[in-house]
Amino acid sequence: MQQPTRRHVVIRLACGGAALAALPAARAQAAQVDEEAEAAVALGYRHDTSKVDAKKYPTHDAGQHCANCGFWQGAASDAWAGCSMFGRKQVAAAGWCVAWRRP
Image: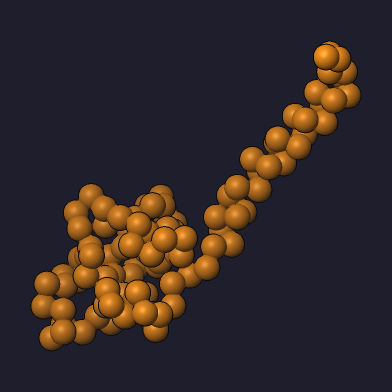
């Protein structure tokens, strides 16, 4: 087995660094949940918690939103992030659904 040359090591490090740098970009490119999608309708998801139908969802509280939910997968400052309820799709920080729970 040949020992890697300095050139091979540098190339591998550059490729690895490029792959790591692409991860946040891939996260930002994730599709956003469509309010009309089957899963969103089933969970009563809305991009804006203030637009939730209070009669249909009496457990909804105006202080509940995706960014303060236990299923939120982003930072507090993110406008959109992943949610365990929606797989690879992103939800709005100001959104809400019936699965909301305390963190």
